[in-house]
Image 1 (cartoon, rainbow, N blue to C red):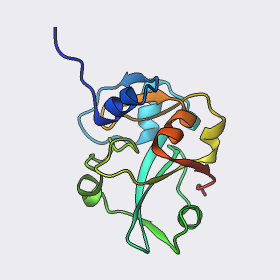
Image 2 (cartoon, one colour; image 1 turned 90 degrees about the vertical axis):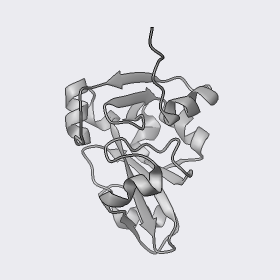
Image 3 (cartoon, one colour; image 1 turned 45 degrees about the vertical axis):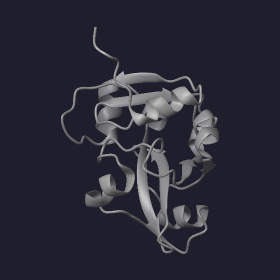
Image 4 (tube, one colour; image 1 turned 180 degrees about the vertical axis):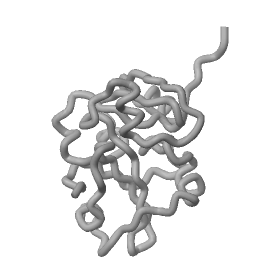
Length: 158
């Protein structure tokens, strides 16, 4: 019998004793979050994507937003006390986070960045985020996630 595959994010959640469920989908390369949610039958408002941005100060930040929404860069900057933030180029994602595009998650990155989760997640009992690998999502409590990574909930979408 083969060993069960665990991502860094799953191992982190196990250490924190946070319950989660794994959802897998067939995918060999990047697919946007809307297609992932639709393929898995997940509600768009409960499926979040991870965006990484660099602030004017040079610091990196992680933002979790519903897959069908867009990050408001001004609100995002205000949420992390920066004058401005800009999304990092796709080619930098792996270098900065340790994850590939489409598999990025706020858990288990090379370094834990300040993380802001869109306020709508605070009212959800469970939501879906990437597990740190393309083809795998995890479903967990947004509040437990925020507590484990010192994240916070704010309005950061357009």
